[in-house]
Image (cartoon, rainbow, N blue to C red; front, side, top):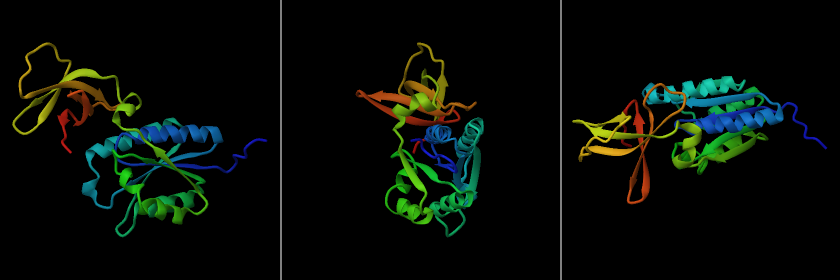
Length: 216
């Protein structure tokens, strides 16, 4: 007995952070297995100031990845008074989607969205559509899929912030210098990614945006 995969349609929902690439990969594999159309959706905030340069770079990478997989990439705005669940459900019903994929991670906003009201709200709105909540791993397990191979690097403190320097040699290390390993994000021409520092045997990952350490 074979599975009837006719009329299946996949919608992957991605949001801020490096996990979107992995979710799109999961959606692509499912779409290929079911011979179903693939769509990828990100929900833009209602206020323009929340939509920053960093997210624009993520969106560009997601769009390229989706189109290379033969899918359609969509950006829909979350207007005032509406929730992300409203936007996702509206798009899914409009497009005849049968399966939705979202990610769950303590490292991103989806951690908040997939606890409590968000899942309940979405399930109420999508009816018989299947909802897949993918457990997205923390940074260390994601590095091979989302970042280039690590390279020796350091962060050098200036008056107001730390700047990244790669290709370092054996020059002296002072209190204003942090030694570590830099993992550049895939599909970017900028020095953006994660800077790994080991303290007391524990790895810590610092966020680097265009060559500067962005403290959360």
